[in-house]
Image 1 (cartoon, rainbow, N blue to C red):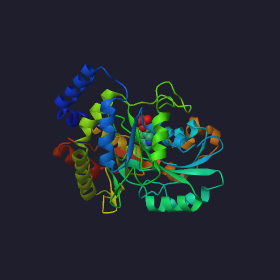
Image 2 (image 1 turned 90 degrees about the horizontal axis):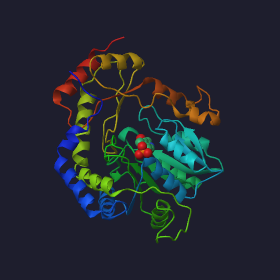
Image 3 (image 1 turned 60 degrees about the vertical axis):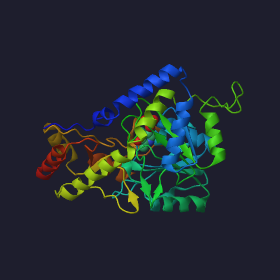
Image 4 (image 1 turned 30 degrees about the horizontal axis):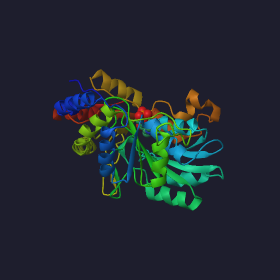
Length: 367
Ligand SMILES: *Cc1c(COP(=O)(O)O)cnc(C)c1O
């Protein structure tokens, strides 16, 4: 049997007609950037997140850069970032001229360990970026209370967690400002690149609305040095169509995750924690840990099961961050995750026999 790591077809097939209709509508309207489709999606996504403002932009990296710029973070500032995340989180910090300060995650949740944050705070620290990694919310109450104590701002990186909840509250509204990615492979993905900034703060929203569009609110009047990071009408239109089914798709991921958690029983494999009342996980990724990760990967791939590693090299050991001078061994938990983490298929449209086949293979894996 074959099980790909991810398959868009089951999602897109059931919306095919509506997506084509949307394409035709935008084509016929002959208006392509920051128009009615963008406004409509921003309104719908704001209501989905229960947030006051949503501002569409080019991609998830830009969303984080725009959030940092709105908070006026730049040269000489330090920003706390988890040591285990996709590199975009740190690159956004570097891009505005600030320095990412890596803080280790908890192995049990993969998310930043609030107890480790305070040790890294200095007078230069201005912001904590909380990443809701793999679809599970970070511990926002703990993060917000540290931020309040030290007068720091909090940015949520929501790129992997559309629809996730923390103590009943929607992620994206738990800090000062948040960035979302709608890269096709995310839980809510466009048919190309797209992103959004989400905030309840009127002033930050106003700044982002200018920064994303050349620093301009009125055509040819440029109040600040902005950039070009706009959401286009096609992608906004496709996102509005797909947003209708996001809850259903997330529920299916949660159903599959629960089957995995109940039925994968192999002492060599450590499973992630299930959703519960405090943490509603949307399972962007189903991450298992295994000391024989590479052997497990090879075994699954040879049996037709697609896998992925999130992430094979931690950021501090990437060439891009040589300049920080962090040596192997200094961030042992991030290094352990990069050595032992394996992501197995979890997506809407997986067949029951595919789920069972994966469980069977994982249960018979041995050293
Ligand atoms: C995907 C991702 C981003 C960046 O999003 P893009 O749309 O690819 O720019 C940022 N942070 C995290 C955690 C991500 O997974």
